[in-house]
Image (cartoon, rainbow, N blue to C red; front, side, top):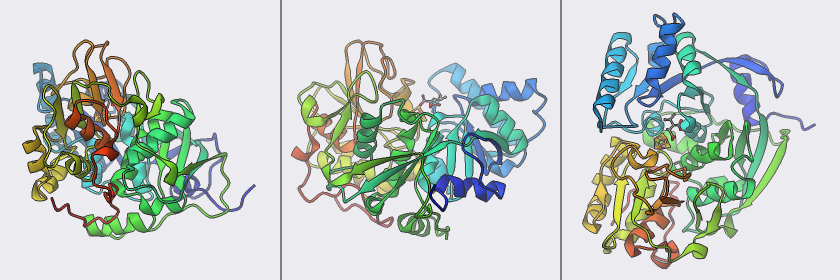
Length: 437
Ligand SMILES: CC(C)[C@H](C(=O)O)[C@@H](O)C(=O)O
Ligand code: SF4
């Protein structure tokens, strides 16, 4: 047995006043509960059936987002949105209407996730909040409804795995390459119901944008939560972006983990998850030349500032290949505005991209770019099972924004190193960094 606590244990201790056993069912107070237009109506039904409808434990800690089908592509969607608007108005809960952004990104934009918090959302990618040293996890609509009413959630305390990131990554590596490489190693069921804790000296070169990508995809290997500590990068980010002072929160050096995994960052190369599974991970160079019909740069996985700057480094002065549709959907209005100020949107539009913002769109095959039969996409999103983005016989390669932009420029899967400036460093840790085209 080691002495000292893991980050997961510290988080539970912060809420319960004691360290629970692994496997124990703990009832934990939550700091934020959220749902979106894909899940809220189910939660509402549960509230109606269970007489929880009249209770909201704290309207400031409950948030509703319209992001999955926004603006409404169907009459049915428009009506769901209206139900949510009315509920939010009547109950005074936080409400983010069409165009604000994808829920997990808005949580970051508004600093709703902070070190030490417990967060549940009726969406599997709620794990994105783990980037901020918050125990953030997805729950079903029933659990979300109960948490909205009572302010509590039940959780089985997960086993804990240390994922040690060593060394410094090459400049062309992004968070997406890191997390896909890990998923390729452990498999899509490699971390079921475990807490993945990212640690090691490599952390200092991993930006908050990329940490969010890594936490976001932790659920694609089954993890309950994908946790980063609150370290210098985190503290500087909250200071620079939000003017907030947040505590450092790190595991003790002698903490006791159930398992351990080592990732050597210097040896990573650009990778894709080839269809039809997220763990079918290969170096980009092994699939180079595959022709593509659509490129999607966006989603809660890769719809951030760093992601479009990486794409702009490739698309500046180039054109999207004829016959390819390149769809860029920054995850929120805030991200979009920052890109606009820094000339990145200009580069994307001039290159021939279709640009929108603040919605899931093609990620879930809802709208703004579905795939036809036999079509091939390179997408920066997180799931590539058959039919995810349209026709069941279309194929999706998941990749980093740099790899996606390289495919847009050439019309084929292309190693981004062939098009990037040799000194490019795609993960940018400094929160005040602004791109100079
Ligand atoms: C609609 C929602 C329940 C779903 C999720 O939880 O992940 C969606 O966001 C997705 O990415 O498939
Ligand atoms: S962007 Fe995609 S993965 Fe993320 S919440 Fe929306 S549908 Fe789910």
